[in-house]
Amino acid sequence: MSKISILGLGAMGAALAATLIRNGHDVTVWNRTASRSEPLASAGATVAASPAAAIAASDLTILCVVDYTAAHAVLADAEPVLADRDLVNLTNGTPGDAKSLAAFLEAKGAAYLDGGIMAIPPMIGDDGALILYSGSAELFERHKAALNALAASHYLGDDPGLAALYDLALLSGMYGLFSGFMHASALVTSGGGKAADFLSLLLPWLQAMSGTLPDLANKVDVGQHDRNVVSNLAMQRIALDNIVRASGEQGVAPDFIEPMLRLAARRVADDHGADDISGVIEIIRPQK
Ligand SMILES: NC(=O)c1ccc[n+]([C@@H]2O[C@H](COP(=O)([O-])OP(=O)(O)OC[C@H]3O[C@@H](n4cnc5c(N)ncnc54)[C@H](OP(=O)(O)O)[C@@H]3O)[C@@H](O)[C@H]2O)c1
Image (cartoon, rainbow, N blue to C red; front, side):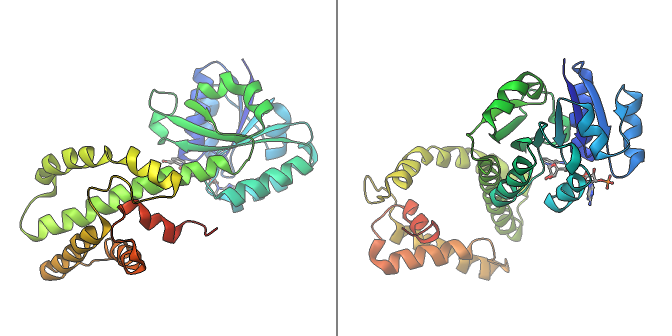
Protein backbone atom coordinates (compact mmCIF):
# COMPACT_ATOMS: atom_id res chain seq x y z
CA MET A 1 0.00 0.00 0.00
CA SER A 2 1.28 3.48 -0.89
CA LYS A 3 1.40 6.85 0.79
CA ILE A 4 -0.71 9.09 -1.48
CA SER A 5 -1.64 12.75 -1.11
CA ILE A 6 -4.64 14.37 -2.77
CA LEU A 7 -4.59 18.13 -3.38
CA GLY A 8 -8.10 19.44 -4.10
CA LEU A 9 -11.21 17.96 -2.50
CA GLY A 10 -14.00 19.12 -4.78
CA ALA A 11 -16.50 16.53 -6.02
CA MET A 12 -13.79 14.67 -7.96
CA GLY A 13 -10.85 15.01 -5.57
CA ALA A 14 -13.02 13.81 -2.66
CA ALA A 15 -14.11 10.74 -4.69
CA LEU A 16 -10.46 9.96 -5.54
CA ALA A 17 -9.41 10.28 -1.89
CA ALA A 18 -12.32 8.18 -0.57
CA THR A 19 -11.58 5.40 -3.09
CA LEU A 20 -7.89 5.28 -2.17
CA ILE A 21 -8.76 5.15 1.56
CA ARG A 22 -11.22 2.26 0.86
CA ASN A 23 -8.41 0.46 -0.97
CA GLY A 24 -6.19 0.62 2.12
CA HIS A 25 -3.76 3.35 1.05
CA ASP A 26 -2.25 5.77 3.53
CA VAL A 27 -3.96 8.97 2.31
CA THR A 28 -3.09 12.58 3.15
CA VAL A 29 -5.44 15.34 1.95
CA TRP A 30 -5.31 19.11 1.52
CA ASN A 31 -7.95 21.54 0.25
CA ARG A 32 -8.01 25.35 0.07
CA THR A 33 -11.29 25.38 2.05
CA ALA A 34 -10.24 23.28 5.02
CA SER A 35 -13.77 22.17 6.05
CA ARG A 36 -13.98 19.95 2.95
CA SER A 37 -11.29 17.69 4.51
CA GLU A 38 -13.48 16.74 7.49
CA PRO A 39 -15.45 13.76 6.00
CA LEU A 40 -12.18 12.30 4.67
CA ALA A 41 -10.45 12.78 8.02
CA SER A 42 -13.34 10.83 9.59
CA ALA A 43 -12.76 8.09 6.99
CA GLY A 44 -9.08 7.82 7.98
CA ALA A 45 -7.18 10.45 5.98
CA THR A 46 -4.46 12.63 7.48
CA VAL A 47 -5.11 16.34 6.90
CA ALA A 48 -2.06 18.36 5.81
CA ALA A 49 -1.70 22.03 6.73
CA SER A 50 -0.40 23.06 3.28
CA PRO A 51 0.17 21.66 -0.24
CA ALA A 52 3.92 21.48 0.59
CA ALA A 53 3.24 19.40 3.72
CA ALA A 54 0.93 17.08 1.72
CA ILE A 55 3.50 16.58 -1.05
CA ALA A 56 6.30 15.96 1.44
CA ALA A 57 4.19 13.33 3.26
CA SER A 58 3.70 10.93 0.34
CA ASP A 59 5.33 8.87 -2.41
CA LEU A 60 2.69 10.07 -4.87
CA THR A 61 0.64 13.29 -5.03
CA ILE A 62 -2.54 13.58 -7.09
CA LEU A 63 -3.69 17.11 -7.95
CA CYS A 64 -7.34 17.64 -8.94
CA VAL A 65 -8.59 21.23 -8.84
CA VAL A 66 -10.97 23.26 -10.96
CA ASP A 67 -8.48 24.54 -13.58
CA TYR A 68 -4.80 25.21 -14.29
CA THR A 69 -4.84 28.66 -12.67
CA ALA A 70 -5.82 26.89 -9.45
CA ALA A 71 -3.25 24.13 -10.08
CA HIS A 72 -0.42 26.68 -10.40
CA ALA A 73 -1.68 28.53 -7.31
CA VAL A 74 -1.60 25.28 -5.28
CA LEU A 75 1.89 24.30 -6.46
CA ALA A 76 3.41 27.78 -6.03
CA ASP A 77 3.40 27.21 -2.28
CA ALA A 78 5.15 23.84 -2.69
CA GLU A 79 8.17 24.67 -4.88
CA PRO A 80 10.79 23.88 -2.18
CA VAL A 81 9.57 20.26 -1.76
CA LEU A 82 9.04 19.29 -5.42
CA ALA A 83 12.46 17.71 -6.13
CA ASP A 84 12.29 13.89 -6.59
CA ARG A 85 8.50 13.84 -6.07
CA ASP A 86 5.95 12.02 -8.22
CA LEU A 87 3.00 14.18 -9.24
CA VAL A 88 -0.13 13.14 -11.17
CA ASN A 89 -2.33 16.00 -12.35
CA LEU A 90 -5.97 15.11 -13.06
CA THR A 91 -7.12 18.71 -13.57
CA ASN A 92 -8.89 19.22 -16.91
CA GLY A 93 -7.08 21.52 -19.37
CA THR A 94 -5.49 21.71 -22.81
CA PRO A 95 -2.41 19.86 -24.12
CA GLY A 96 -0.52 23.19 -23.88
CA ASP A 97 -1.56 23.60 -20.22
CA ALA A 98 -0.30 20.09 -19.46
CA LYS A 99 3.00 20.58 -21.29
CA SER A 100 3.81 23.83 -19.51
CA LEU A 101 2.96 22.37 -16.08
CA ALA A 102 5.13 19.32 -16.93
CA ALA A 103 8.03 21.60 -17.93
CA PHE A 104 7.65 23.64 -14.71
CA LEU A 105 7.64 20.51 -12.51
CA GLU A 106 10.44 18.75 -14.38
CA ALA A 107 12.57 21.90 -13.97
CA LYS A 108 12.03 21.51 -10.19
CA GLY A 109 13.12 17.84 -10.35
CA ALA A 110 9.65 16.27 -10.07
CA ALA A 111 8.28 13.48 -12.30
CA TYR A 112 4.99 14.37 -14.01
CA LEU A 113 2.07 12.33 -15.29
CA ASP A 114 -0.98 14.06 -16.74
CA GLY A 115 -4.41 12.46 -16.65
CA GLY A 116 -7.87 12.93 -18.11
CA ILE A 117 -10.74 11.49 -16.10
CA MET A 118 -13.44 9.93 -18.28
CA ALA A 119 -15.97 9.46 -15.48
CA ILE A 120 -18.12 11.37 -13.03
CA PRO A 121 -17.33 11.21 -9.29
CA PRO A 122 -19.75 8.36 -8.34
CA MET A 123 -18.07 6.14 -10.98
CA ILE A 124 -14.58 6.44 -9.42
CA GLY A 125 -13.46 3.01 -8.17
CA ASP A 126 -16.16 1.20 -10.16
CA ASP A 127 -16.22 -0.60 -13.50
CA GLY A 128 -16.79 1.79 -16.40
CA ALA A 129 -14.51 4.57 -15.13
CA LEU A 130 -11.49 5.31 -17.32
CA ILE A 131 -8.51 7.60 -16.78
CA LEU A 132 -6.24 8.48 -19.71
CA TYR A 133 -2.59 9.12 -18.79
CA SER A 134 0.46 10.58 -20.55
CA GLY A 135 3.86 11.80 -19.41
CA SER A 136 6.45 9.95 -17.32
CA ALA A 137 6.25 6.21 -18.13
CA GLU A 138 8.41 5.44 -15.07
CA LEU A 139 5.98 7.25 -12.76
CA PHE A 140 3.05 5.42 -14.37
CA GLU A 141 4.73 2.03 -13.86
CA ARG A 142 5.69 2.85 -10.24
CA HIS A 143 2.12 3.74 -9.25
CA LYS A 144 0.01 1.72 -11.71
CA ALA A 145 -1.47 -0.53 -9.03
CA ALA A 146 -2.72 2.42 -6.95
CA LEU A 147 -3.97 4.31 -10.04
CA ASN A 148 -5.87 1.21 -11.21
CA ALA A 149 -7.91 1.36 -7.98
CA LEU A 150 -9.42 4.65 -9.22
CA ALA A 151 -10.40 3.55 -12.73
CA ALA A 152 -9.16 1.52 -15.66
CA SER A 153 -5.89 3.18 -16.76
CA HIS A 154 -4.97 3.87 -20.39
CA TYR A 155 -1.41 5.15 -20.92
CA LEU A 156 -1.01 7.08 -24.21
CA GLY A 157 2.71 7.91 -24.33
CA ASP A 158 5.39 10.16 -22.89
CA ASP A 159 4.12 13.43 -24.43
CA PRO A 160 2.37 15.00 -21.39
CA GLY A 161 -0.17 16.72 -23.67
CA LEU A 162 -1.66 13.51 -25.07
CA ALA A 163 -4.03 12.72 -22.18
CA ALA A 164 -5.63 16.19 -22.44
CA LEU A 165 -5.82 15.90 -26.24
CA TYR A 166 -7.60 12.52 -26.12
CA ASP A 167 -9.81 13.59 -23.20
CA LEU A 168 -11.00 16.66 -25.14
CA ALA A 169 -11.40 14.57 -28.31
CA LEU A 170 -13.70 12.17 -26.44
CA LEU A 171 -15.64 15.12 -25.01
CA SER A 172 -15.92 16.55 -28.56
CA GLY A 173 -17.60 13.31 -29.66
CA MET A 174 -19.92 13.56 -26.65
CA TYR A 175 -20.87 17.19 -27.35
CA GLY A 176 -21.49 16.32 -31.02
CA LEU A 177 -23.93 13.65 -29.81
CA PHE A 178 -25.60 16.07 -27.36
CA SER A 179 -25.91 18.87 -29.95
CA GLY A 180 -27.41 16.44 -32.50
CA PHE A 181 -29.83 15.21 -29.84
CA MET A 182 -30.87 18.77 -28.95
CA HIS A 183 -31.46 19.87 -32.54
CA ALA A 184 -33.38 16.67 -33.33
CA SER A 185 -35.47 17.07 -30.16
CA ALA A 186 -36.21 20.74 -30.99
CA LEU A 187 -37.54 19.65 -34.40
CA VAL A 188 -39.65 16.80 -33.00
CA THR A 189 -41.10 18.81 -30.11
CA SER A 190 -41.86 21.73 -32.50
CA GLY A 191 -44.21 19.27 -34.26
CA GLY A 192 -45.91 18.24 -31.01
CA GLY A 193 -43.81 15.11 -30.37
CA LYS A 194 -42.09 14.12 -27.14
CA ALA A 195 -38.29 13.83 -26.97
CA ALA A 196 -38.64 10.76 -24.73
CA ASP A 197 -40.86 8.95 -27.29
CA PHE A 198 -38.53 9.95 -30.14
CA LEU A 199 -35.64 8.07 -28.49
CA SER A 200 -37.08 4.75 -29.69
CA LEU A 201 -36.33 5.97 -33.25
CA LEU A 202 -33.20 8.00 -32.54
CA LEU A 203 -31.17 5.44 -30.59
CA PRO A 204 -31.28 2.63 -33.21
CA TRP A 205 -30.61 5.24 -35.94
CA LEU A 206 -27.48 6.48 -34.14
CA GLN A 207 -26.40 2.87 -33.56
CA ALA A 208 -26.76 2.15 -37.30
CA MET A 209 -24.88 5.33 -38.29
CA SER A 210 -22.05 4.48 -35.83
CA GLY A 211 -21.43 1.50 -38.06
CA THR A 212 -20.17 3.85 -40.80
CA LEU A 213 -17.40 5.26 -38.56
CA PRO A 214 -14.70 2.61 -39.28
CA ASP A 215 -14.95 3.41 -43.03
CA LEU A 216 -14.94 7.18 -42.39
CA ALA A 217 -11.98 6.80 -39.98
CA ASN A 218 -10.03 4.96 -42.66
CA LYS A 219 -10.75 7.76 -45.16
CA VAL A 220 -9.64 10.37 -42.58
CA ASP A 221 -6.37 8.48 -41.94
CA VAL A 222 -5.58 7.99 -45.64
CA GLY A 223 -6.72 11.52 -46.54
CA GLN A 224 -8.77 10.26 -49.51
CA HIS A 225 -12.54 10.54 -49.47
CA ASP A 226 -13.61 9.37 -52.93
CA ARG A 227 -13.60 5.54 -52.51
CA ASN A 228 -16.73 3.40 -51.91
CA VAL A 229 -18.97 6.46 -51.59
CA VAL A 230 -22.63 5.53 -51.11
CA SER A 231 -23.86 8.88 -49.72
CA ASN A 232 -22.01 11.63 -51.56
CA LEU A 233 -21.48 15.07 -50.07
CA ALA A 234 -23.46 16.96 -52.75
CA MET A 235 -26.52 14.91 -51.78
CA GLN A 236 -25.80 15.37 -48.06
CA ARG A 237 -25.41 19.14 -48.52
CA ILE A 238 -28.99 19.25 -49.82
CA ALA A 239 -30.16 17.22 -46.78
CA LEU A 240 -28.35 19.66 -44.47
CA ASP A 241 -29.91 22.60 -46.33
CA ASN A 242 -33.33 20.94 -45.92
CA ILE A 243 -32.73 20.60 -42.16
CA VAL A 244 -31.86 24.31 -41.92
CA ARG A 245 -34.91 25.31 -44.01
CA ALA A 246 -37.20 23.00 -42.00
CA SER A 247 -35.81 24.51 -38.79
CA GLY A 248 -36.81 27.96 -40.10
CA GLU A 249 -40.32 26.70 -40.93
CA GLN A 250 -40.68 25.17 -37.46
CA GLY A 251 -39.28 28.19 -35.57
CA VAL A 252 -36.18 26.22 -34.48
CA ALA A 253 -32.87 28.15 -34.43
CA PRO A 254 -30.29 26.50 -36.72
CA ASP A 255 -27.28 27.25 -34.50
CA PHE A 256 -26.18 23.62 -34.05
CA ILE A 257 -26.63 22.44 -37.64
CA GLU A 258 -25.73 25.52 -39.72
CA PRO A 259 -21.92 25.18 -39.25
CA MET A 260 -22.11 21.66 -40.71
CA LEU A 261 -24.06 22.98 -43.73
CA ARG A 262 -21.46 25.75 -44.24
CA LEU A 263 -18.58 23.23 -44.21
CA ALA A 264 -20.35 20.83 -46.57
CA ALA A 265 -21.21 23.69 -48.97
CA ARG A 266 -17.57 24.87 -49.00
CA ARG A 267 -16.33 21.39 -49.83
CA VAL A 268 -18.92 20.97 -52.60
CA ALA A 269 -17.97 24.39 -54.01
CA ASP A 270 -14.33 23.18 -54.02
CA ASP A 271 -15.37 20.39 -56.42
CA HIS A 272 -15.53 17.58 -53.82
CA GLY A 273 -19.27 16.92 -54.09
CA ALA A 274 -18.66 13.31 -55.14
CA ASP A 275 -16.62 12.59 -51.98
CA ASP A 276 -17.81 11.12 -48.72
CA ILE A 277 -18.72 13.40 -45.80
CA SER A 278 -15.36 12.55 -44.17
CA GLY A 279 -13.82 15.03 -46.68
CA VAL A 280 -15.13 17.95 -44.61
CA ILE A 281 -12.27 17.26 -42.18
CA GLU A 282 -9.83 18.59 -44.79
CA ILE A 283 -11.21 22.11 -44.15
CA ILE A 284 -10.72 22.01 -40.37
CA ARG A 285 -7.60 19.88 -39.79
CA PRO A 286 -4.12 21.51 -39.73
CA GLN A 287 -3.09 22.32 -43.31
CA LYS A 288 0.11 20.67 -44.58
N1 LIG B 1 -17.03 16.42 -11.48
C1 LIG B 1 -16.96 15.77 -12.66
O1 LIG B 1 -17.95 15.22 -13.17
C2 LIG B 1 -15.63 15.67 -13.37
C3 LIG B 1 -15.45 14.68 -14.35
C4 LIG B 1 -14.22 14.56 -15.01
C5 LIG B 1 -13.20 15.45 -14.71
N2 LIG B 1 -13.41 16.43 -13.78
C6 LIG B 1 -12.31 17.38 -13.52
O2 LIG B 1 -11.86 17.31 -12.17
C7 LIG B 1 -11.39 18.61 -11.78
C8 LIG B 1 -12.07 18.98 -10.46
O3 LIG B 1 -13.48 19.00 -10.68
P1 LIG B 1 -14.52 18.95 -9.47
O4 LIG B 1 -15.78 18.38 -10.01
O5 LIG B 1 -13.88 18.34 -8.28
O6 LIG B 1 -14.72 20.52 -9.23
P2 LIG B 1 -15.35 21.23 -7.93
O7 LIG B 1 -16.24 20.30 -7.18
O8 LIG B 1 -15.89 22.53 -8.41
O9 LIG B 1 -14.07 21.51 -7.00
C9 LIG B 1 -13.10 22.45 -7.40
C10 LIG B 1 -11.85 22.27 -6.56
O10 LIG B 1 -10.85 23.21 -7.01
C11 LIG B 1 -10.41 23.96 -5.86
N3 LIG B 1 -9.98 25.29 -6.25
C12 LIG B 1 -10.62 26.16 -7.06
N4 LIG B 1 -9.89 27.29 -7.20
C13 LIG B 1 -8.79 27.14 -6.42
C14 LIG B 1 -7.65 27.95 -6.15
N5 LIG B 1 -7.50 29.15 -6.70
N6 LIG B 1 -6.70 27.46 -5.32
C15 LIG B 1 -6.83 26.23 -4.76
N7 LIG B 1 -7.87 25.40 -4.98
C16 LIG B 1 -8.84 25.85 -5.82
C17 LIG B 1 -11.62 23.98 -4.95
O11 LIG B 1 -11.23 24.33 -3.65
P3 LIG B 1 -12.30 24.99 -2.63
O12 LIG B 1 -13.04 23.83 -2.02
O13 LIG B 1 -11.47 25.73 -1.67
O14 LIG B 1 -13.21 25.89 -3.44
C18 LIG B 1 -12.08 22.52 -5.07
O15 LIG B 1 -11.24 21.66 -4.32
C19 LIG B 1 -11.74 19.59 -12.92
O16 LIG B 1 -10.61 19.84 -13.70
C20 LIG B 1 -12.79 18.83 -13.71
O17 LIG B 1 -12.82 19.18 -15.09
C21 LIG B 1 -14.58 16.55 -13.08
